[in-house]
Image (cartoon, helix red, strand yellow):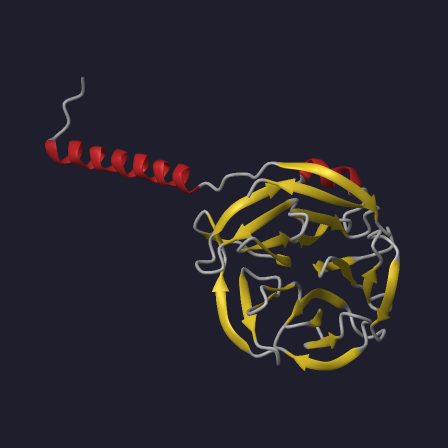
Length: 258
């Protein structure tokens, strides 16, 4: 046994306790991975560069991107046949969508311009402006939240003004590249660019509480790098989560335990 001076023994003991405490804290904050079951899958147009996906009054809506091919789509009851399609002008790159206070909002990527439509027939209502890039969008009926590819989510007004900025953290570290958003049972569910997980965020604290690993579902669809997981829609009547990706040929209905 090495007989160390007393001051060194205290230092070593303190270091060990600090390391053990850090390990315990890391284990205690690790977010549980949610289990899921595929309830059903539906054909999805593999030409759609999916940017936003949502249900409103039981109807499925999708927003697509790429300049010259950005569209807003309202589907029929089969979830695959368009009932109405609203193309965006060719200069705009469509992004996330959300219904907020009975109007359908759609972001654009770099134009700092959003469009507002009537969800019944996708007829235009008005436009709004915001600062920076637009990525994902969601609403709980009272609050409208958007992502911009950073580690922050922005609550915005109906006119696009920033109300507050919320830093999103996973295990204490910022979680960046936040993309498509959806409100799910009190959480903001978020895709992350080039990530096969969905993150469930506490909208009060910004902490990730759960994550959903969809790697097994996504990898067979990802024959090209741009075919990333993107598109989250919560069906409140079915209590199921619907997901797809950019240029995917399937739309999946999942049952999750949350």
